[in-house]
Image (tube, rainbow, N blue to C red; front, side, top):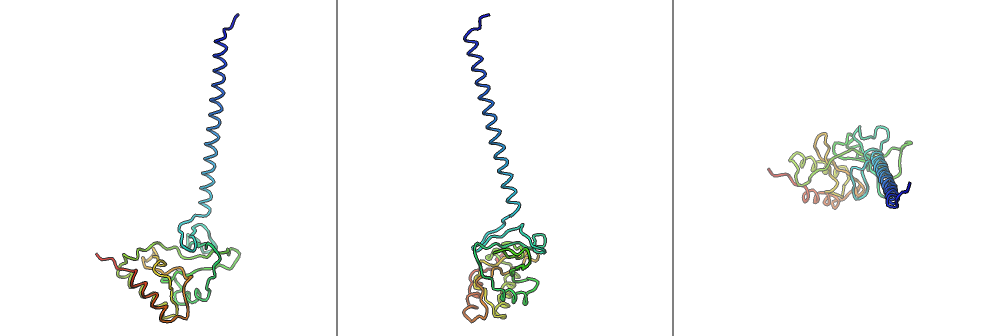
Length: 204
């Protein structure tokens, strides 16, 4: 039996196309699997350390915990970008004048086996629009600044460092890296001027 050249060529082309398609499908599947694995790893990392906020000196992390300092109990971790010298005397004083953190959101620094470099814990708060305060919020914040000054402390970094506790919807003063103890009238003026300039009551 004589096989025509055209049939032979046709079979050859068919096999070549089949192989080409097979290789193409194999590459596509490989790429899809690779992308899926990459996405899965990325999601896994984000679940391990979930960043929920970022400031000028550090970022706020949700899933880092240490004993009672965990998100379920209302705490988040703050990881500073670099080395920071925390004034422990100041935070001890804040605890003395506001143990339940109704006004001042202080740093918590575990000194046990889960203590981490450049990481502190603090209460989880939400953003506050300083141009749209209610009258009770405005008075509450003014009173908080007054209490600080009466205890020889000035914050010196308002208005950015004021947030709200979702529990009672009242303002809390946060981030104490620029705070000063043993203050004079100039330090008080810095806080008072910042308050009068940047915090407003929402007019209805």
